[in-house]
Image (cartoon, rainbow, N blue to C red):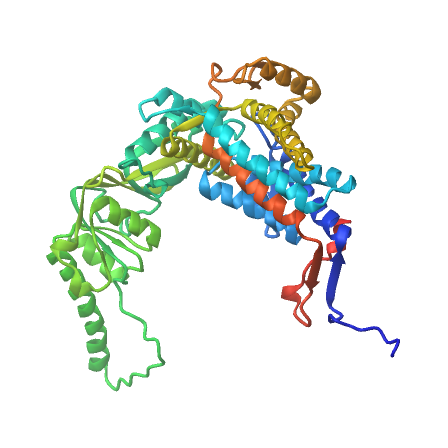
Length: 534
């Protein structure tokens, strides 16, 4: 037999096996949790993210931080995915989901050190997650759309710590009104709520407008500033001469031929505007460009026009006004038009916007955010989106739970009771799962500058005494009944966070071999050195 070693994999493949692979992945996941840990809660800190082009984002929104960081490690990427899932499903609780996942893996490492097999740990985690969902349903409180005050408190809890504290009552009022207005037969489509931003004034000047607001101005100053009883045409073709897609050569041998050619171009545009007028439209929103001559003719006919309106805005306008999007000028008739009470050009400081109000569909809404700078407005937008997601989730599932770490402590207490009935080593995994949940109230305290051990000890004692709504009120830095303090969250935030965190922790724990190809002669497929995380 030859003593020559057998080579199974190419040279550019990096392989980590067994315990090294597990520890490597767990460490990467823990690092992701550590990154967002300091942003949790009303006293959480912000992160400044600077892109290679010097664009700056200042935020404490978990999913925004992780997406902008462009994380490369494969296990860490899985943590980013659960933050995205949480954002899609609920719109809030992304930091919570990532932190629970990181703590589950950190606690699993202790069990691995005690020679407990990963499959036993994952089985215990699954049992604990299922039991947690049962407990959440038991302890959750029911609400209806009539509980307006409760819904406002949910919105305020969601926005706490996101730079919106000064105006949170006004913003909460706007959020609840808008969600209730777009609700149809218990279903809520948050896409019906358009968010527009305008620099200038203060956050308190943020307003809810019944209608659509576009960050567009009329294309000609000669057009009317206000159109009452608007008949609206939506077109996705240009009101200009089309550029040919192939090279074309036109031979002109006399001034008359040149004049005739120019005249034909003008005549084509005249026919287009004539068809717009014949349809009865007095407002037109165009997805493409509008020629200078077409602008002149439209202004002459007293037709209000905006150009290069985005596809998403055109679709929102169609939904709001009842107009049909027309792709061919010959198809534009009175039947394709939508209607609104007024279309008006409004100036805010240096910015000009178009307000379409009194739409046929009353569910068309716009939240116009005001603020002193782009960074402030962007963070307020993230806060409002969190609030919208929380209120919509509360109405969709009709259940809420106490915030301030109260529900996590109660879940941990009930899980420890549940673990006593288990006979195998899964019992240890369930106990570690309970400890991972306690990481949330401990971090809330730590971020507020309070001793987490003292807080956890008192919270556990009060919950053991049957006070299940006792949590941490960080506005007063006291342990109290958080339902009375109006610190409330939708049950879906917690159930989704536990479900996603368990899934990713189980998946990472089951990996015992990492085979990473750097992709020969292709730098774009370069996988980071997995050993960097050792």
